[in-house]
Image 1: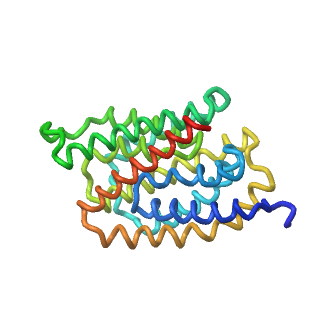
Image 2: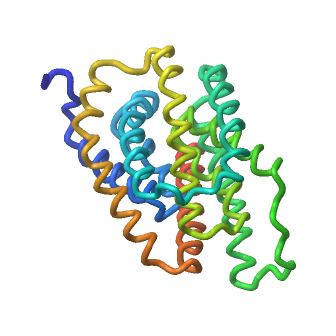
Length: 256
């Protein structure tokens, strides 16, 4: 079995830190920080291998999150989100060999950074435009499709999903529960395309199995934090996390 596992100590350190952050984010606290998982692992192994290794761990986290947030999600938003996300996953599978990892990182990072910056300027009173009205259904569907596409490629669906959902100004618990259902659906439908593209090697699956127990603990921690933080601070943390994670993706995409 040892020969089937990655032997690099750097990888294991980065993987544990990355999975802990991703799990807390999936528990509903930290928003866009969930995108750091693949970049953390990709510092030690190839991007496509990191993405395949993350997928089983993400699914286990999602199931944990579903139980923790059961019954609190918004069906109105999910009816808009899920079909569009499925289309995005299909487009991601078809375009797997077309866009480079760095091109995707630059695209995702630019979108998330611009959106987060706009929110902070208004929140700090530096942009005096009136409070925008709630966006319509097609705004949600479009960014959900983008999220499905980028989630398939490098598990970076968080920033586009935040662009879709944060302007809806949902209660933090409803927001967190809705994102958990969204990513459970998206990650499950990604399994077959990943298998079809031959991403699940024995080394990937054995390593994922050893990493998986970190996920449920981290998700429960995220749920705990979410339920004890005010709505104002929840959105401050989410938008701050969106800018940090998007900026990180942008820098990686431009410099590697």
